[in-house]
Every structure is written in C-alpha cells, then in structure tokens.
Amino acid sequence: MELVKSNSVELEDYAVPDAATPESAQASLEPGTDSSQQSARTSRTLHMLALSDQAIVSGANFLTSMVLARGLTLPEFGRYSLLWMAVLFGANIQMSLIISPMMSIGPIQRRLSEKSYLGSILSFQLVFALGLTILLAATLGVLRFTGNSIESSWIIPILATNIAFQLQDFVRRTFFYQKRLFAAVSNDCISYLGQLAVIGIFLRLHMLSVKNILWINALTSLTAILVAAPMMPLPIFRAKVLWGTLKRNWQSARFLLAATIMQWTSGNFFVLIAPLFMGVSAVGAMRACQSIMNTTNIWMQGLENSLPSEASRIMIKAGAPGLKRYIIRALALLGGLTGLIVLIINLAPEFWLKLIYGPHLKGYGFVLRAYGIISLLTVLTLPLRAGLRSIERTKPIFVGYIVTTIYSAISAPLLGKLFGLTGILLGIIGTQILLIPILLISLRRNLSSNERF
Image 1 (cartoon, one colour):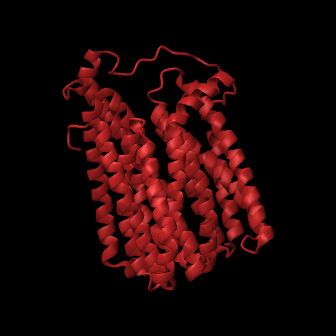
Image 2 (spheres, one colour):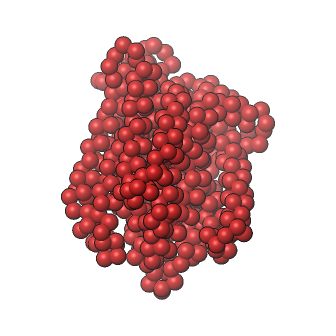
Image 3 (cartoon, one colour):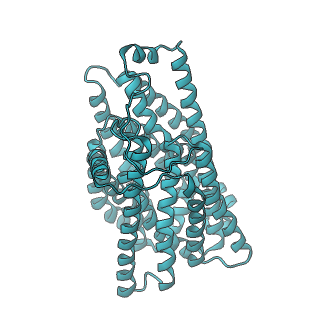
C-alpha cells in the first residue's frame, strides 16, 4: 500500500481513462475490447470486496444488537438506541457533507492530484468532527440540566463515541475510494469485530451497561483509527486549495445536506414520537426488529461504498445509456436479494424473534414484518440516488425529503395517538412510498427526455 506523505498541491495532467479521446471512449463501449473486459473485472472485484466488507460490518452489528438486546432490559436497550441515534445523525450529516461528494466528485475532478484532494477532504473532516462533537456536548448539557433524560455518566463516553465513530467511518470510506480494499476490510474487522468481542466479554462478566457499551464503541473505533493513521493522507491547510475543493463539493453537498436532515427527520421522527405514546420499550422493540432486517445492509451499505463512484465512472465512459443499464441492473439485484430475505423472515416473524432475542420480544412479530417492507423499499432508493449523484443532480433528493418530512411532521403524532405502534410503522412505510416515485421520475427526466427509463 502506498503511503501518501506530502501535503503539497500537485496539479496533474488529468486524463479520464478510456474517455480522453473519441477512440478510447468508443473502445470502452465495445464489449469485446480488453479495456472493457478489464474495467468489468475491476468493477466486479470492487463490488464483491465492498459487499464482503459490509457483510463483516452488518454481521457484527447484527450480533452486537442481539447481545445487547439479550443483556440489557428492553427499556435500557431503548435508551441506548436513542443515544445511538444521535451518533448516527452526525454520521449521516458527515455522509452528505464530506463522504458523498468525495465518492462522486473525486473520480471526475481534474484540478488536484488524488493526494491533494484527499488531504483537503481530511482537513474538512477533522474540523467537522470536532465542531459536531462540541454541538452534541452543548445539547447533552442542556438535556441534563433541564431534566432526567440524560445521565451524567453517559456524556463523556457518548462524545468520545461520536468523534471516534465519525473518523473511523471516514477512514474506511477513504480506503474504498482509493481501492485499498484490504486496508478497508482489515480496519473494519478491528473496529466492528473488536467491538463485538469486547461486548461479548462484558456480557459474560455481567458488566453490560449503557455507559460501558458507549466506551467500548469509542475505544474500538479509536483503535482502528490508530492502525490506519500511517496509511492516510496528511491534511492540507492551504486556503486556496481548501476553498477550491469546498466550492466544488458544495455544489453537490448543499442539497444532500438538506436532504439528509430531511431524511433523518422523516424517518426517525416516528421513532422519536413512539416513546411519547408507548414508552421507551417500544423504541427497544423497534430497534431490535430493525437490527434483524439490517442484514440487508450487507449489500445496501456495501454498495454505498462503491456504487456512486462506479456510476460516475460509467457516466464518463458510456454516457446516459450506460448509466441507465447500470442502474437497472443494480435495482434488479438489490430488489431481488432483499425481497428474498424479507420473504423468509416475514413467513414466521415470531419464530425469528424468539430464536434471536429470546422470549421477551414475544408479540412483536408485526413490527418485524413492517421493517421487512421498509427495508425492501429503502434499498430500492440507493441506485436512484446514486444515479442522480453521478450526474450532479441532487436537488430532486432534497425535494423528495421535503415531501416526506412534511408528511412525517403531520402524520406521526396522529398515527401514534390513534393507532399506536401499528400507526407508527405504517407511517414509516409511507415515507418510502412517497420518496421512490419522486427519485425515479427525476432521474428519468435528467437522463433522457425521449427514452423510457
């Protein structure tokens, strides 16, 4: 693995592979050429390793959730889930501001060398992680001194978890961007499998608590960061370079940021409403069922590492027709795999809940069925969002989440009050039913006004 040491700015003679000349572009579209075959092999290898890595991450997360749900009471698991939502909110903001623009724009930007571009992105990441952690500290302080919802012993570990989780996620995404696949997989093994192992030890020792789990989250992520540090680029603090990168990335990130906030609000607003009508145990049950369906993250989040960048490269090489074919194949693959998992689980949800979590989730089979439908609908949005991002048309994503946020704000309190947990679940399904047509229609219009997508 090449170690990027210099933080100097290097303007390079950039040439897009196989697209610099009409001849090379044409060659890339001819299925019999060596270039096309090599590109296909590279794409398959990238996707397979991305999926393998996500299998490790999702598998470890699933087993960790199983251990936590068994080792904690349902109310304790619900409280931990609410705290973890705060960490994931920060990670989602990071995805829209830092990682998504890097994955989509990095492969096609021509001004900076890769190490200079990544160095500038790392600088933004460090500032962002520090700033968001300070904001989270202020929020937790207010909650602590205005009520009893936050225990003082949770504050330091949740802050440490927040900054360590963000930085480790940035490390893994950077390795995938650079196609340093072994480094990415190894780093995730340290973080996620290490976390699972330590939590398992604490379970055996009867030492599981919300505070201890948060410290384990933080320290395993920190260990992975320290191992990866020598392989990462050095941050760049040159104003001209940072300003240029910021301007280019902001063109994509501005709508993604707003869309992420809207997405988080529309999807999680129902979860936040649930305790008001049904208590914190309802959140624990929802998160436990969601963890089972998160097995679909093996391909969804795995392809989140590779699909947007690959879509951008295909758009350069093959244009709109090639991108259309790529998105259709992705929809068919993701929908088919997810649909199979949903079918297997939804045939006997109570059986799976008892097998995985024991008897204390009896009666929540309908929640697991609902999350199966939610997972299937959610996974279908990934290729559509990747297609829009690859052509730098992220405004429709923002518009879609405006619609779902307004819907959530109106419907969540009503559905929760009138229909309880069933109403909350139906409301979450409704957000995806509204979003998919908006993304699909927008992508069709942007790719081609004459051809049917």
